[in-house]
Structures are given as structure tokens and as C-alpha cells.
Image (tube, rainbow, N blue to C red; front, side, top):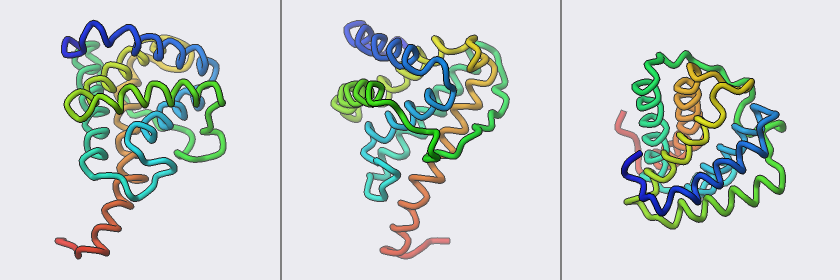
Length: 174
């Protein structure tokens, strides 16, 4: 990720290492932590309908760009990975320690503004999954599928309700 300043990398790397260490025994905990981070960065706690459409699209774009780059770099197709747990189910909770760390990284990424936020999040996701790939939780080949599944779930659970609210308010074009 050449577009991430060298000065910004150590902090993002530190958070990545902490997230991996704090969730390495549970795939669900790791994915719950990522989802919580997305909600914090994009202001959509518990899939609130009030977030801005631009920011919802930004996250979907980040996840898809991370997927494409992972596929290109590792020459993997990215088999679909059915995430076992629906977002928001009881097992997708994070510990207080992880939640605190996520608040800190979300604040750092969120403060960057739209010019740098997506790049910082993409870098964070990439280095985090590089740390986790090859562990008992994830194979390198399934990471693109996980990115894709997270993007689709974000759309279904956050963007679609936002769209429905906008349709009610402004009418539909379909």
C-alpha cells in the first residue's frame, strides 16, 4: 500500500497486532471485531439508518478493493466463505478490551477524512488479514471471499435499510 504514509503505518500495525492477538482463538470474535470497527468508523452502531450514503459506499469499495488486490497478489480466486454467524447474532460480540482498542483505531481512521480514510482502512484490513492468513482461522485462499461476504452483508444490513428510508421519503425510481 504505497499510498499510506510511512509515519501512519506503525500505529495501524500496532492496532492490527493487538486485534489479532486479542481474537486469535475465535473466528467469530475476529470478524465481530472487524464489524464493530466498521460501525465505529462509519457511524452506524447497530446498523443505524442515519449514516451518509457516501460513507456506506466507501466501505463497500474498500472491501472490494482489498479483495481484488488480495486476488491479484496471491493469484487466488477467493472461494466464497459462508460466514457461519449472521452479523449481530449473540456470538458476534467483542470484549471490553477489544472494544476499547477498536474505539482508538476507529478514531484514528475516522479523523483522516474522506481523502485518506479509505486507504487507511484498506491498509489496516490487509495487514490484519496477512497476520491471520495461514492460521487455523483463515486460509489465504478464502480471504477474498470473506471481504466479499462482509461487503454484501454491509449492503444488506446497513445500506439497504438506508435506501428503503430514502425511498419512503423521496420515492422510488424502479
